[in-house]
Image 1 (tube, rainbow, N blue to C red):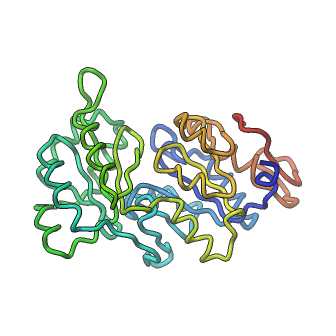
Image 2: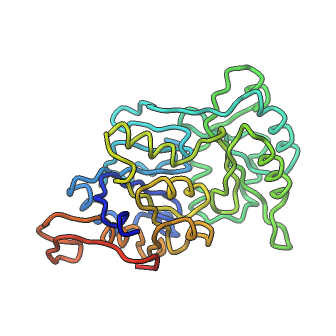
Length: 308
């Protein structure tokens, strides 16, 4: 732990939902200022999201221009200057047909991610109103989705290049979610895909061995940065490999106990600007004129695995 806390961080990867965002789906000003400060100190900051390229909150990120985006849980890495996909790992189409047939026979909301865009089978459109999700999440679904008239025909065409699939489930009266367990069991039994809990009780799956950690390693290699000089912040199951791969893995205070257990340190919650606190505490600075609070500081180092 001492060595990890004394590595100079050169690359910082941030999850979006439940991490960079507050519960209203906004980036707190304190997080923005902290990111800007890290960038001014020479740290490359990137988003690492389960969202597709279009779903990343580009408008909110204008003040903290990021050169790369890790999207769809690491299935695709984009350069933001020209939207070029630098690295892509698609699901094996031949394995998807029987899976999709099984899911489409049940009341499950499905989003299919193709080349940075999200598509929803027309047959599941109305399920979005029964998911019980926060308003900003439902609005995100509605604003970004494209119509997919016939998912099965698309897969059979042989042209399917699917980066990721997200499944959202309708809550049941007993506190469980309709069909979630049986679909989880189906997917986890398939060796050709990687299945994670992406938050909001959903299920996300990509090609096997694809995860945000893969995207983090790719960008680090592109920039000539060692993995020990990276830091990642996240809260959900789809952040696990990234947090374990990073030189310093930081769990949000609102993260699950499983994510906290595999992380190196724990910051505050997303409602308490945990990203800003983590940047202030765990990124070592050279002498800077001012900190976020307006005071001079030479370096910042961390402590044990406890809230900041």
